[in-house]
Image (cartoon, rainbow, N blue to C red; front, side):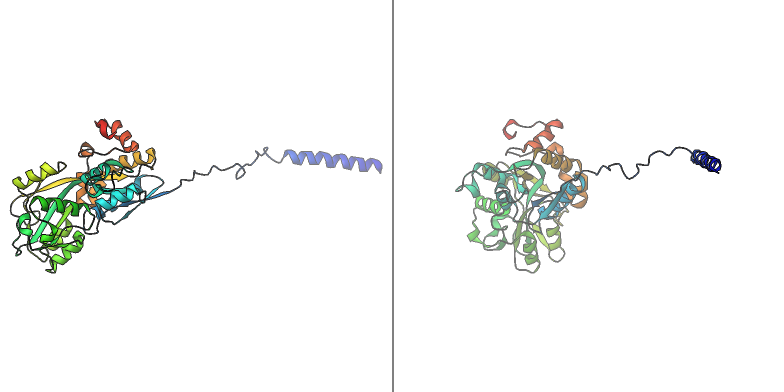
Length: 342
């Protein structure tokens, strides 16, 4: 009996080894799901804003197009466009650190940097840096065709929109009118933004409207839907006087047919430029500058003034120092950067 039990145990042991051998190939350890999975790096979003101008001008829609392009092409950046009082307010708010980006006329930025004009009492404002030129700022004046206004000298006694208080347009209007022998007190001055003033013209509540805008300006075209207008000319003689006092300005020709004008009309222009807080990192401003010029065609698709954005003209009329990030990009592109703005 004992012998039988031993034989049965031996048989069971042999059988167990045999079954183990029939179990197939040795299984590789299955680490699926056990290895640590690499998570993609978390990109923190930088939220910044650009201050533009009144909703009826060029700055507001163009600034919105620029903000969209930066947001679309720069990882971790979200840019929001907001309306504002244009050049003077833009420079003041960027300078005060209240906003990161601003659009402004180059002559206004120069006044701020050197403590001239609007800043004559407060002195130099130098807490902002330039990125580059956006487009030519064209000083455009239009009058109702039956107003009797053909030139700046005809504005006396008329109802005239001169630009919002503190705006670059108002500062420029004040200077141009003075050179023509007129003060705001010589007319009924209105300080509405160009879009609001355009509505007043359509309703017959204003005789003339001035703005610093791209060509063509949608707000002027809007006036033409219900009113006949004249484009107010600044002739060669008047331009020479303006140039003597305001060297930033050039002569600009509004082509025939732009606003129903049968002939070319002469006026003046400076440059719209982009400014930034000096506190923004060099790398981020480099990317903002790069995307701005390299995707200019997409900005132009959204607003006609974008067609003027050009690396070749990026520094035309820039007299205040560049941000190091913008400077880095221009030097990489072989742009000749004057020492005084480096």
